Image 1: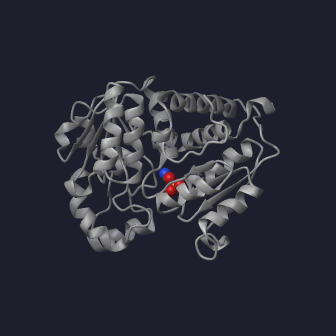
Image 2: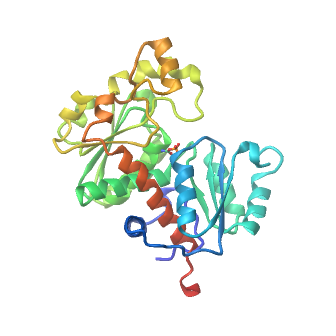
Image 3: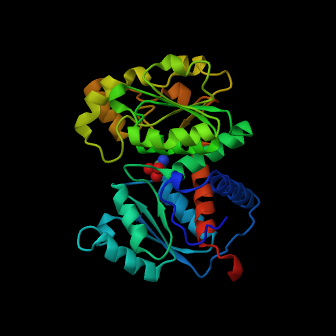
Length: 333
Ligand code: CP
């Protein structure tokens, strides 16, 4: 396996063995971190992390992982760079690649990160686009494997807005890892036929299935993992809240749903989450629509079955593994 110089743009760009190897390296880095073992492999390198959308976990994970690996890290947001406003993606990519050893991008169209990678001579890492969130899926599968001790044969049910970027990457990762994937949500918010058509043959090859359904009964007694995400994704217009609540309220993850999954089922969420009224957005929605919990109840979010904080931590270890593998040139060391 040779990762050196490669981009990390989507899960489907990597083989099953490559993805498993990334998880192995992430586990190693997690162990190093717990043992306070220094792993500053790249004191001579610098990375740029570009965020056109807000972030807590992804930004902090790239920053901490970069520092842990000994690198300098430059954060740029829309107000701090010319990208897209005064300077094209192609020019930005070519200039940054002369200054930095790797570039992370979070933003809108997948074409932007694809173009950055096309014009950059250093690795580009996808920190979320409208199409996919591959570093999220890798961190989530690390969490699932840590908990169950294996991946193959498990069933992951993504409940709610099943055509969002996180669901797309989880479907791809499930197919690659032989995990059954159930997308359960309203027919208006189903995954695209294109992504399903790409993932289904891979899942079949690896002995798993992909089910697209609106019927919650499909996951009852089967789901090892119940996963959900916010009902309105980053960048979507706030005016859509009413429509989304109407469509998705029956898919709220609550204790009744968890009780109908497998007895050993866990709950995952990529975060941030609207499980209480401790955010300004949740309070605004509450004022208009009268609901105080959205995609997941506070009871489930705070339950023993919920591994959401482990999941957030594993973002950093997996992002570190991706950066390490794509920057490490064997013969240099
Ligand atoms: N899950 C996730 O991507 O979190 P942030 O938006 O905080 O980076």
